[in-house]
Length: 342
Image (cartoon, rainbow, N blue to C red; front, side):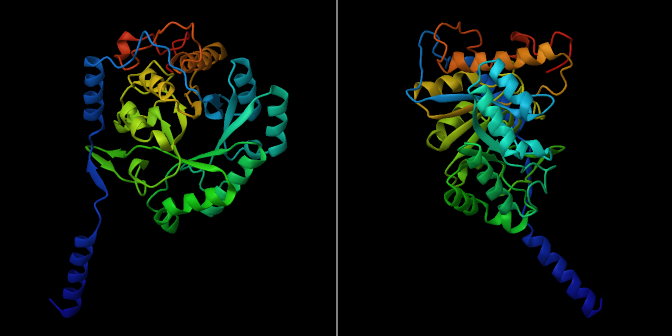
């Protein structure tokens, strides 16, 4: 072997020895089963108690719950079903960042713009701006213009360079600069066979990072195999925003109507009410594949009824879904009247 080949081999070995491990064993399903077993054997929900927070908890409807995802339809559906306000996901659609349109609809319906969801999804890399920090600043300033005090955002991907490396401190800096709460959302690991691929940085799970504000999503937690009640208890003081939905413990991000999956959603909402939580709960369910408008509207109506019931906002409501962690087969059907899966 000549000296050049030996040098290349040495460099290759050195590089491999320093390479970070980007995968770990897939434990989501086993964790989900373990959490379900716990709730099946431990009664957590207080059936005979009525808890309601001393603080106002606003109930919002996300534009991602409305199909088609238009701003006007979001306001119309939110007003029709008695929501307090809306969350608008900023997308390629220009009306999602049309301040005059959004403010006009808010005035016409009497609803609040509770939050904006920043365009940090994988398929929205250049919406608003190609620079990630500038994108967050623009979204935060849009939020102020429409009266929203919170921007929901996802953690960055590992390949997003300096944005990813400086994300924790940068989020705080943008929040302080704009005066808007940037609430980082829990995500989930991607899967490849028996391994989990760690694509988010610093992590898909924001619990261990020094964020000031957090968003908790039940469907993401289900996909990740997280214990929702335990997690919410741990982050209670930093929890500003909840995406209300459900999951059945599959590897898909399902966004089911709350109470139709296997997550302890009712128990978690009651916990928030009991401990005087202050924040916003926004319904984010998947209605994209529902064919009938009547079925879609029932999903939105059932979701806010579930929220009001378990947050103690509807004192006379029967505790229909008090054991939201029970098996899917024991729950009301999660299919629409036309046989289309939710």
